[in-house]
Amino acid sequence: MAAVFVSPRKRAQQTLDPFFGDDSVDPGIVTAIGDIAEWDYGHYEGLTAAETRRLRKERGLDGEREWSVWRDGCEGGE
Image (tube, rainbow, N blue to C red; front, side):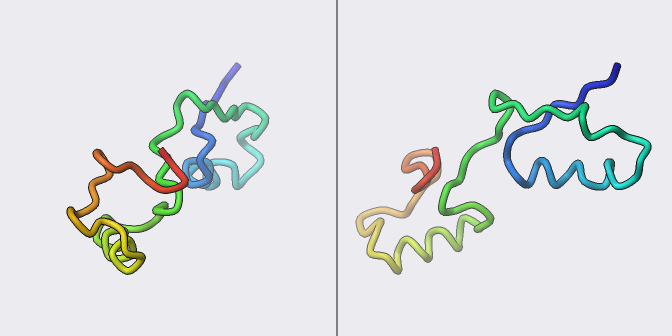
């Protein structure tokens, strides 16, 4: 019996779509597991670091120092 485990993140599940485009693979074997979820970027999902820094500056954040994902995290995410 086959099993496929995937992150619950939408982009990870979309990666599997081409594999389930025909009838040769049963989509019922796929299980989303939170323990293998990648980083949650919250409001910054899909943005580059440069775009995130620009948007944060436009909002008046990071006046004293530039944003760092490692130090400052992500609004609405981890």
